[in-house]
Amino acid sequence: MIPFSPPRIDQQIIDEVIDTLQSGWITTGPKTLKFENELSKYCGNPATVCVSAATPGIQLLLSWMGIGEGDEVIVPAYTYCATANVVVHSGAKLIMVDVNKEDFNINVKKIKEVITERTKIIMPVDIAGLPCDYNEIYELINSPEVNKLFTPRNDIQKQLGRIAVVSDSAHSIGALYHGKRAGSLADVSVFSFHAVKNLSTAEGGAIALNMPKPFDNEELRKKLKTMSLHGQSKDAFSKMQLGAWRYDVVESGFKCNMTDIQASMGLVELARYEGNLARRREIMIRYNEAFSAYSWAKTPVFEQKNKTGSFHLYLFRIKGITETQRDLIIHEISEKQVAVNVHYLPVPMLTAFKSTYDISHYPQTYLNYACEISLPVYYTLTNEQIDIVTKTVIESVEKITQTT
Image 1 (cartoon, rainbow, N blue to C red):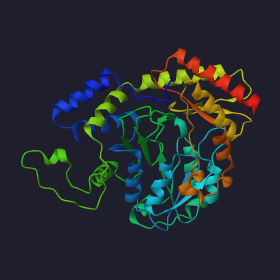
Image 2: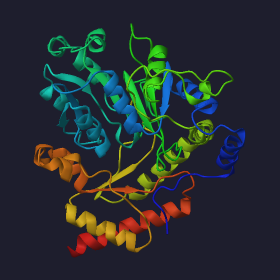
Image 3: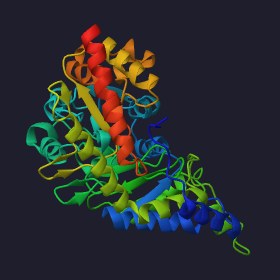
Image 4: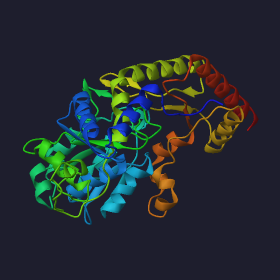
């Protein structure tokens, strides 16, 4: 069996986690702080807050920004449900738009069509790790035509003076856009360190702060840190110092802090991350070369002028097939002991959303989804296994397309 995306748990990870377990401090403490600082150095953003997962990280942001009923947040229809769920939980109205034909990212022209005076946030998603068109997004929100529509409802929104760009960067740590890394491309970017991500802490995430002046990103880091700990004025590590038990709760916050056990894994993964990216790129190039001889194969975009993705997902498309044929192809591949996946079932097709949103309004999203199969990409995938995957995919595609 060739798995889809197993975590890279080796002796380095084990040793670092054991070191944390033996240190006597396993929840949020010195290693979490070190990981936050190392992430900021790597991504080039002023400050970072680590959290228990990407989803509560975005929820913290929306809460801090005062997003709620009467507001609108724009997201792509092609994304994981978490991007939409956080907006629903905030009380704001979820506005979905279609994606590009060549890649899977949000279509900036479609964004323009749905902006209103209620729009407070655009939340692009770097699908598969390829950065969205951030320059075009900022040009749009800063244009006089759009900016005059902006209607702030609180002091934070008034201070920003425009629509905020909060990037769902769950896939894109390490990606580059015009020479800048993900984490420094939007006002705020939120990473995921879930078990299947390039950089894993089993579960976990990080809020990369990059707010423009006059915002103080370090002060905002402290604010979000407090919010992530029930609004408590001291974290557990600070409280445990001799005589420092007294604390206050300054607001009704959340509980979504990262632990030092998670941060231990993250520190190892980040230190060797460039090697991870290089190997993932090699895998994708090898896939592209193998499929280049087949006219039905549409290989994914993972590098462009001024863009380098994080090589997180290999979103392979098969031209001219139906959704039903795609599912039969996946079944055929799985029968041959190769694990593949689909990223993603579009949000408008999910039961929780389909009564409000119609997938026919997002035609490119559906076209991209209906013929997409995600192939295995991970550091320990060998060249021999890559060859087995490509051979299996080719045989399965040709069998199903010739018989259905």
